Amino acid sequence: MTGEDLAARRGVETDVYDPAEDSRLLADVACDEVASDDLVLDVGTGSGYVAATVADETGARVLGADLNPHACRRARDAGVEAVRADLVSPFCDGAFDVVTFNPPYLPADAAAARDDWMEVALTGGETGREVVEAFLNDAARVLAPGGYVLLLVSTLTGVEEVATYAGERGFSAVALADHAFPFETLTVLKLVR
Amino acid sequence: MKRDLMDIICCPLDKHDLDLDVESEEDDEVVAGTLTCTDCGETYPIEDGIPNLLPPDMREETPA
Image (cartoon, rainbow over all chains, first blue to last red):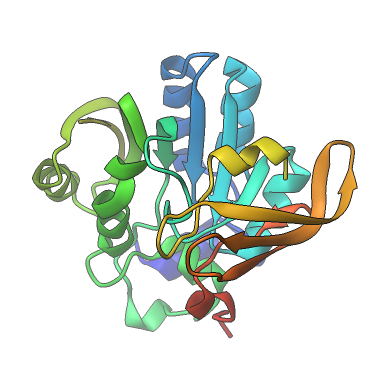
């Protein structure tokens, strides 16, 4: 599926990615994993759906970070503590028990290039892994001892490739859940140091 | 933003602590103000309760 198809299917005429199957799968897994006394960061929080759901269901404090100012405002309106940030760059070392991320993961398709906030929300460069890899380069820094990452990965992005890259950054990966759709299978990887 | 966020956030450039300067506050939340790096001196705005901690070179970058 191309970014254009996906954008059309998901009816994205707005500036912010609306929650879809991927968001719901990540939120479901996070609600099972997160403890009430955890401090959680939801990277690329978008509408704030995952952050708000996890906060409501678990009682944990969940921050939402996004590059997109429209997303930050929408997440804040949804009751999420929002921070405008590039991935985890403005967060202290060892700050979080859990970091969740539903990244932009579609391989860029020149024909579907939109040059707007929605493209930023959907595409992860030529491989679909550019944003995920930048995230994995810095994610361990912000994790508390025993902390972990819950990362949504699609077969369109390459689950093995992402797990291998995470391994090279010192993480071991376990697949906690997956869900097959006609054009992709979504998996949530738990990455532990 | 809540004041205790100060324990969680840092300068995105050099990871040093930030100083909070509050311009307005509502219901225990900082609505407007600035965050200044104690090391490099870079300042980051807080607007409508949202701290903008993008590195300065990304702050103006918006898609068409």
